Length: 75
Image (tube, rainbow, N blue to C red):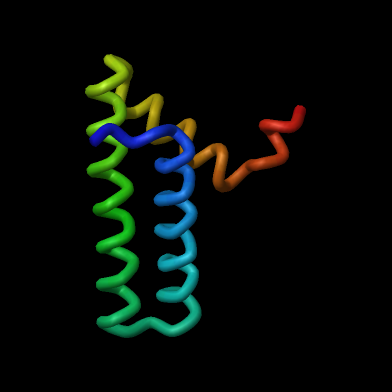
């Protein structure tokens, strides 16, 4: 099943939350959670890009931009 762009944004948000948890409390468990979340996001990006016939890089950057710079969308 192809992921929507909103799915990608949600997965990237989860990956960023997992990264923040690792930075706040580094451990094997928090690192594994971060890596799993990032891997899930990357797999969804590849699937979405293939389904849409677009660049994986462009899809990934758009999702990351939406999460990390939400104010840019409003402008």
